[in-house]
Image (cartoon, rainbow, N blue to C red; front, top):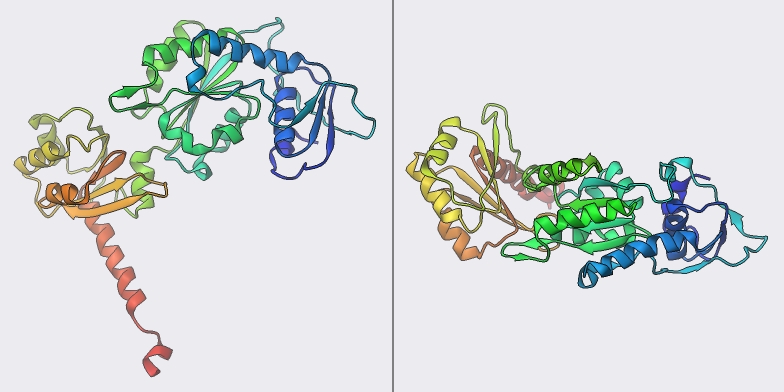
Length: 362
């Protein structure tokens, strides 16, 4: 039996499983996953639970109780270290599930994982694997919608998300927290929205950890800069319309030289975190000569139940954004590709409204 078989929900309800041949992290994760699905899991000893309990204790020592969404050692189902009944189904875990190293408490590692735009279905296989094997998950604000508690059995899950002007934990404290757990021997996943290297400070975290001798792996994710527009029908590039895309952070206002360069380049402009500076951005682009007829898409809360799209033009964009009450998080797209999307939508609408032959006869 493969360890991957343990992740299929409701398959194990009411069954009794034997994990007594295993002592490492994979044993506890498997026991948690099976117990969560309704099985009774027997482990050989309390060692696996004691190991993850040390991560819970470290979190409490560091004053992280108010940020913990899930404790690693707390069973979420029936797990027992008593004598295993003879009728239990024996589970074999892959050797690759066990940690490397020969010391009793080997140094752990950190995986920087891109969680994509927020839809769990858009997580990569590598991202799901890293989360499922994690001992500790540090979760971004935009990653909470990914149901990480269900995807990370046996893991300590900590919410360190940052909103504009409201940081639950500073970046320096996040770095030190990852380091502390890795030194304790944990497999740490730093889960970020989108891609960790697109305005996600992934490069900074990688460098910090590497300087401390911690191994770092990177799992790229779908950046919202491209996936959210695609979900709304906006192609960032389009043959004979534009052959370049510029992704920018709108957290700080752009200067006129930057905006003039963008207009000269003629690329599609994609702005993240740019709602607050949107009026000055639009004014600067118009001053730089970008036509008022240029398309603008304001795409709020992509891939959520509250997703909302506003399609307008550069000349009307400021008034339209105010009238609609556009707020963060939003992806802003400026360029003629937005007009292409609108033209395509009109074609689809016209075809939908055209009566079929049977309707005409009726």
